[in-house]
Image 1 (tube, rainbow, N blue to C red):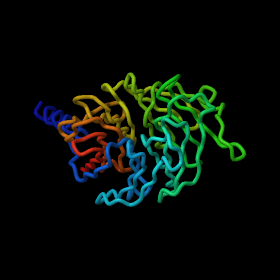
Image 2: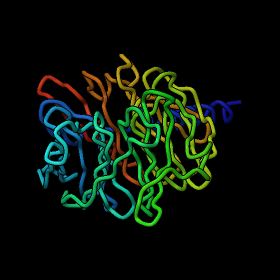
Image 3: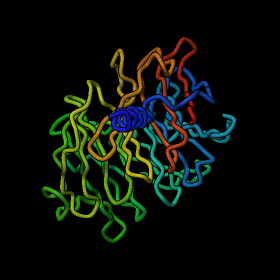
Length: 289
């Protein structure tokens, strides 16, 4: 009986480790307000969207030093910096949000190309993810919602009608998704359902229903999926692993305003959260364990 009790206590302690292990190790101011964050493949650089400054800004993940920045209004006066994504090759992508365009940059934020997406049924693209081949999976937060796959045919972008439901995966109001291990992970902001979408086929699998206001998603190599909760007064981050969900609270992470983005290292040892409007403006908080 004593052995069983001891084993039970050990199992309980192990089950709450993901929700208690992170300690803050970095704090970086990001303009007036901020949303969206992505890490470079070598995890030495983080790219952050500064919404009202309308910039994508690159910082050193170790010490927060400013590295590079690009003003999206240089590409379109109506663009807003609400999201950023880095694919496996290290190319950086940012939707214009209010403008139905997606901008591609190199690792140093030099402009590579602009992709218009107004002809595919997308109403409001806050975030997009891109695979290693450059195919774009654009999320829609209005209209029919969901994710649209845009593929290149003879150097022109078009809807991949062989993917999912004629190029569209029905996963609701999508803001900031991620790609990991052959899947897209995304959460419906309206009902906080976490989905897995097969990158090759577009097949949709429901993983869990989370606490309210699930917004941005990240994943590590071990299969853990991290979801930040935009305006939930208590839950800051949900961590899904093998069908089980643990949570991190706003209080233990020191969060005081909306959480507009999340990133995690491949081994899960470092976590980054974008606090949209702290008492000093936009802020990236880094945590380690």
